[in-house]
Length: 385
Image 1 (cartoon, rainbow, N blue to C red):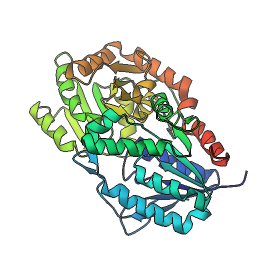
Image 2 (image 1 turned 30 degrees about the vertical axis):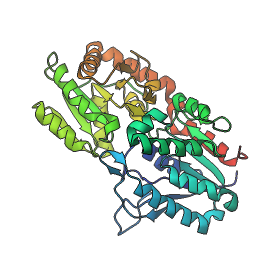
Image 3 (image 1 turned 90 degrees about the vertical axis):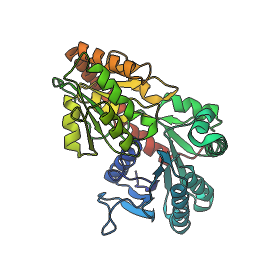
């Protein structure tokens, strides 16, 4: 098959920002280049201005300056607007050279711009839907007025003509309920470069969190949970990787519970450090109220480490857990519920680690990026719905 000219559109770029979507677009860009396609990645500048970002073979174009994406733990409005203007200007000048424009659904303004120029520039239009928020969640996130506006914009984006991908059954059903034309393609694999499954290592008594420190992730809730669990397991410690606007709050809670020597906050670290921590962790705990996928659950399982997630109407990470096989679903993020789940993982011990490794081995192909890439490239060549 002949190579395609593809434009990926996302305002973040791994490793300058870290998250499941960032990893997906970075890995997707690299894999598409390896397949022989010509890839351009439009984003906001996040790297030093004295040189291009090192994404081998990918043409990375900063269509806007470095901007703080969050304020008070919430996404700011200005950066998506700036990014949308930059995306629009780029596509007006270069859109006809692309055969495919593939964008994240959120933030919505660049999506709307790319959709508006699609017919004029004659490219196929592909959208990844990581999450679909309910009207109730929108009101909680942006207030009664801003929430109503956000929900209306989201619904408008859903009803545009597009080739859609999503990453969970939860959000696939919400797309259909909100009026999407046609059936979105469900992608179950977004992880790249996962280790080959093998016998898991014995666990250290360390709980690990990996991700951004933002309100939706509820990172501070892990600190009192560790304090409660230590009443029965006094050697228990925690390492909370990542950073974000809630970092200061986490530090205050650690101080309040007098756990400075027990709870480590190393920030973002390189892959080798994270790999070693995941292999030896007692479990990964993801207390989020909202997840579009839950990539760290897969990354932990690949190393034989079980995960604990929290039940919730907006948490698609629960779809990755088979209760008692590769982890547990805690009923809430309360200290008592999280501590109970941590202690259950500890009490089961190596049998749970072995069943986690076996679960990953049985599902590795379904959970890998390579499995999703075939569906993506096939959709690039399909006629649009």
